[in-house]
Length: 231
Image (cartoon, rainbow, N blue to C red; front, side, top):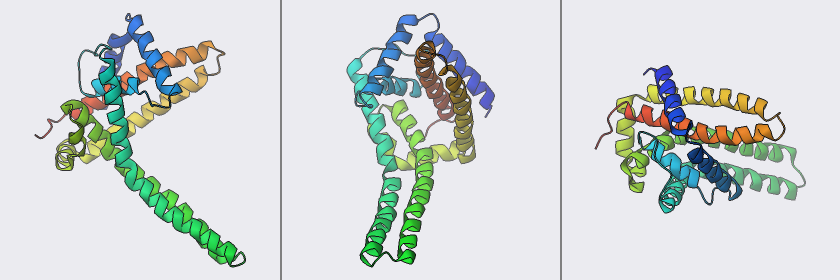
């Protein structure tokens, strides 16, 4: 896969979606603010991202607000469900560690027991982090399948998801994610510099953030579509 071409096409898609269409861009900024101030309880921007993730070209219009809300929540729920294994790992190991600390306190502050309990908690963090990374790799593809099929259940069609990733290539998919992380890091660096500009910097960042949502959604959609999905 030519990741440079995918990035270039994603940039062009984003430019065509926003440049010269200032009303649409402003509406997306408002949706972003609503999502931020409601702690994603009103995930309208995420709902719009689902449309882009679904491969719609050119960039879709902002309409059907109820559908945006529902799709945004569906994406939130899918990601949460896929993170449950990592949450359980941390709760189990972290819980064991917490019980160990309480037991060591009850026993008069046994240093060895307290140390073992702390290691259990740290181990829980580490193992949960590994599980979260693995599940995130799968969850992103699940969200893409949901967006393309318009079916919440297809996000949990594990046989189809693994078959599709297999056809695309696990290495290809993981490298695509790494490339995205690098791009996001560079974007974050630029945003960090802009944040130093009083007021105006924050306003510019609001507009850039909505553009970045479209950019990465289109980027992931192209990677997903590089290989036909199994039925």
